[in-house]
Image (tube, rainbow, N blue to C red):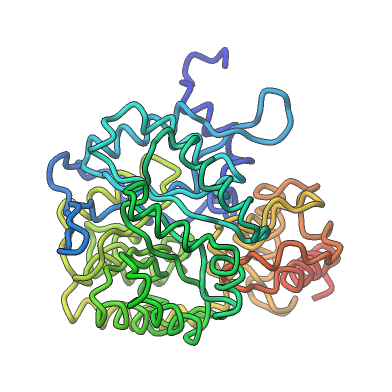
Length: 458
C-alpha cells in the first residue's frame, strides 16, 4: 500500500484474488492467464442507449441487462476470519450500472454466503426507490418451516432496506416435483402467505426460478391458472438451448412453454457460470473471426436477449470490465439473425467435445465444513479442459507443458488447505446443487488426477 504507483482499486484486485467469487477464472489453468478476447475493454460505453423490455402483464420498463448480485466482490475480513463484501466496490458498480441504464437487481438470502442482500440494500438505498426494480427469493432449501420462511422474507425486507419487493421468487423449484413443492411452500402455508402479500402490494410480482426435470417444470405450469405466475426465471444460453447437461432441461422447451402461456422469461446463467466466456482457444478464434469487434461474452448475451419474450438477462458482474462489456452489448441490443443462431448452434456442438463439469459457480454448495473451495476446484479443472491441459497419459505430446500448467494453476487458484484432497465424502454439499453435480465424486476424481500428475503415474 506504500507504493504510490498502485491505487486502492488495483490493490483490492490483488488482495481479493484468493477470495473473490471467480477465483479460478482469474488465475486460470495456464501460467500465461486466460486467452484474450473474452471481454471487450476498448469500445466506448453508451450512457443512454440501453434496451428495455415491457409486457402488458408486467408494465414495468425493465433494462434488458439485469444485475445478478450472486457474485459481489469480496476482500479478506479485517479480523482474519473469512471474507467480507467489498462494499465500496459494490457501490461503485451499482452506481455505474444505474448511470448506464440498468434498473433490475436480483439477489437472494443465500448469495455470497448470506451477505448479498445487505450489501445490495446499502448500495441501492442511495438511489430513488421508484427508479429501480429489486428481485429476491425465498431460499428455504434446508428449513421448510413456516417460521423460518417468514423470518427469511422479513429479513430480506430489512437487509434490502425496502418495504416492498418488485419481483419475488420461489427459489430453485423443479427438483423433487410436486412433493418437494408442497413441502417447501404449500403444507406450511407459505404460498398462501405470499399470495396475500402480492395482493397487498408488498410483493409486486411473484414467480419462481427453475432447476429440474421436464416433469417438475410441467407440474409448476399446471398451477398457473391458480397462482398466476407473473414471470419465471430459467437457465438459457446457446449451449443449453438444445444441449442441456445433467438434470437441466433444454432451454428451447422451457422458453416455448412459457411463451405459450404469455409468461415473461427472466434469464439466468447466460454465460453458464462464465463457461461461455472461457471457451477453448479455437472457439475464441471462431467467434472473433465472425465478429472481430464483439467480445466472446457478447455472443452469449446477444443470444439470451434476442428472444422477444425475455424480460431481462441476469449477469453476475464482479468486475467493472464485465459490466461495461455487457452494457455495450445491450446498448442497444443487435438481435441475432437466423444465420447467427445456426452459427452458435454449431459452436455449441463443438463445445460438447470438451467434457467440463457443469458448475456455474453459484456457491450453493458452500461453505464446505472442511474448508474446501468447491467451485474454485471445479472451475480450475474446467478451464484446463478447455485449454487442453488435462493430459490423458505421459505419452501425450504436450504432457510436460499441460502437467505444469494444471499443477501450477491449481496451487495459484486454490489454497492448499482448500483443495480437493481434503474432501472426506460427507456429501453435505450435494443436496443444494441446482445442477445436481455429484460433487464428492468429482472432487475425488480431480484429487486422484492431481496425485497422478504429481507422481507422474498417468
